[in-house]
Amino acid sequence: MSARQLCVAAIGSWLTLWLWPVRIALESDMAVHMTIQLPLLIGTGLVLASGARPHEPHWLADADWLGIPGIVMVVLGTSFWMLPRALDGAIADPWMDAAKFLSLPLLVGLPLGLCWRRMPTLGRAFIWANFIPKLGAIGGLYLAAPTRLCAYYRLDQQAVAGWTLIVLAVVLCTLSFVVAFVGWRQLSPAAPSWAAHGTPPWP
Amino acid sequence: MSRGFLPLLTIVAATGIMALAWETEGFRVVTGAGARQLSIERAPPLLPDVRLMDQDGHAFSLTSYKGRPVLVDFIYTRCPTLCGELGDDFHGVLQLMGGTATGVPLDLLSISFDPQNDDRQALQLYGDRYGAKAPRWRIAAPADDRGLAALKQSFGVVIIPDGIGGFIHNNAVYLVDAQGRLARILDPDSPPQLFADALRVPAP
Image (cartoon, rainbow over all chains, first blue to last red):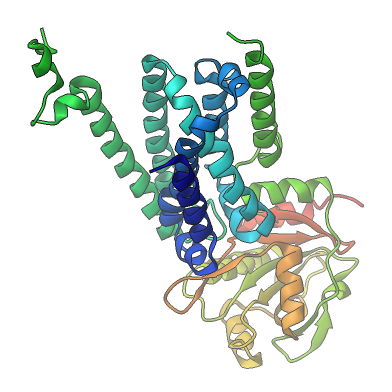
């Protein structure tokens, strides 16, 4: 897809998520809100980033040294929307809802898409290795909390959200384990990349 | 490292940390309920004058309690779970006060947020279940929808459907001080604690 098509796709999917019935459907359940709507909003920003990358101003690419400012922005932005108060606010207050719909694509997804390629491999691994236990820990907190953390969600929804986060953490952990130890290319049995060089990647 | 790096990093980090500090009231709360508690302690909001009808069919207004502190909870009489616990809590407080006819300067008020279903008879049945007698412990419903909306708004009560025909609502007891202000949101853990907290209302 061309850069323009990617941008159009990002804005189109963002508008779809913004549509009233879609919004109601994705916000009526805590687990769906946290693990589907929020990541989809970040996803529209990622698509926007792949469309905007060729047009990224040079000063920004320079200033985002090793992707550090970008990833700091992503970590702070995602932390904000993990607060139960922020999740409640997005339902109760139209301004907070608007802030969510603008900040997740533009202040989390877009910088993530732009900074990721500038980050050193070890830096990316560091971010993954921090993010996955964070998901699991928040899931555990939701399960352990005897009271409702969000006024707009039931306790059983909170438990489902907790379990969803834990399952997600386990799945991501397993996937990243395989990728870290075996690598993406080696996962494809048809054409292992080391075959072209004649030496397998293991000793 | 380019010249723009440190300024960009500083702006990003400062803005992000400020946003987090703002949303957590200076890293003190993570939930909406916690934030509300803090804001009430800082400046107890004056409650609106809402017309209510009690279990005996008497009309009264929320401001008529001025001069005496009152413990308020929100219920609906069909409630199978939480409202029963709240009823037990208030019953316990009533016993600690020594019944309905003592001179302890404290009143109890249970407000139904389901006036469609909670007519006078329903309120009376709920009251009888826990030994509530007006005016010491009124079981009341707002006279109209506007009153209900004003109550929900000013007390900060959030009510959501429980998926099986009932409601889920904040598990809290509200302490209104003698000036008619919402002074504290209390955890309804034990009647003695509630009673002690109620008698320790902040002076005007």
